[in-house]
Length: 166
Image (cartoon, rainbow, N blue to C red):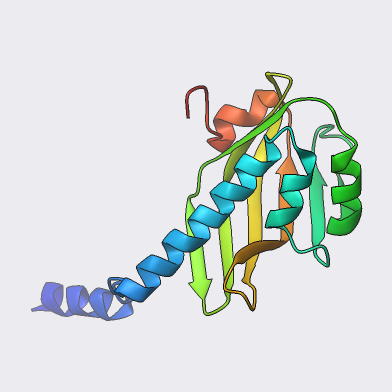
């Protein structure tokens, strides 16, 4: 009887099981994931203006730069400024991301996961992306704010960043 009561107490203290998402919730997650993937694809587009189609210029970017572990810093860049800087770049960029967590509540969403960033086919850095998306009045999901860690390529495996062919 004591074992039964202990098991019952443990069960009562456990968090409830998550309910299956409704079809609407599953659809919203798919839409948000597709918007995040389109954003990543736009980073690799040689037409630098395409990235602006996937971001809100009023947003902010927070770069948690850990490239030098002895001197980490956080850089804050307005999206509008980033888009201006981005338009002037000529190198080839590819960003690959694993979408490990997608949360949606109405017209706001959060996408989280490890990423790998390549510049001219060489791994520049990797880290964890946190993308805040907003569904605009037109029903289109756009990246409003981003926060990401920026770590040396030696950390990609530890972080679970996507590898070749992903």
